[in-house]
Image 1 (spheres, rainbow, N blue to C red):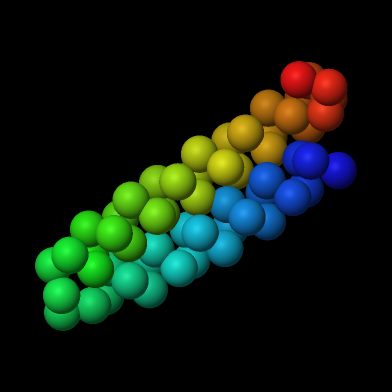
Image 2: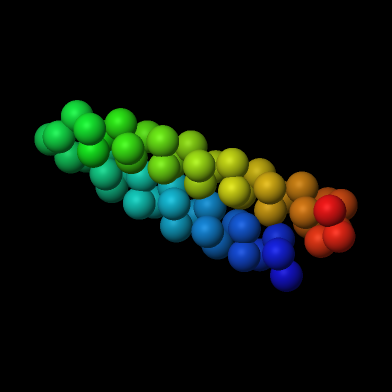
Length: 56
């Protein structure tokens, strides 16, 4: 179950980050880039959990 939760959170963070990167404010764009990267990391964690099981 943790695999699915991580993948969903990752997708949401990645989408929010992409939206923030469209801002005219440079700080918001930087925040969006970081949030998108966080989302990609969460998706990777979900894939690892899926491959190894939720017991990690």
